[in-house]
Image (cartoon, rainbow, N blue to C red):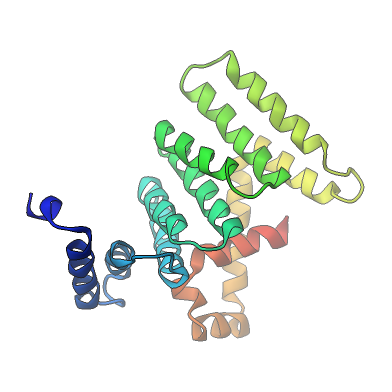
Length: 219
């Protein structure tokens, strides 16, 4: 009751103090969450810390927590393209975590952001999965057909590798995810690469972004 009755500035001061009192080494996720609530404006450094927390939560199987971290990260992201990508990833986690309403809100935000054909196709695909999951069997095929039509816009010669990858993601999502994780592990396991990533903080602070980079490389 005291917290809810406090002013926004008072709450930010409390969160800022709690963040300063929380060890980044011992509890980086709690610290990042307090920093996020202490922020007055968009802050990429805090957004990146939240993204790293999402990666750790996802690695533990905490899809709902990962979605929460990413959703908050997106609100603090200044770059519209990066914000849309974080919102899309958060929406995907909410879909898998069984939170359809939250997923739809995030998908609406993605659609209101920068135009991108591939991102738009993924939004339609997620909406199709949501329709099936919530029993809207009439709308689900329509949405998935629109997804396929968007993918048809890809050039079959220039984008053939991307088309194969997207088809594999749709038909064999479990296998593709395990393959990506293996590629991610092998990249980090190369001593010279691992040393550089550790020295620059990429290992500990931005694992989800490095995971996404691996996704781009193998696709």
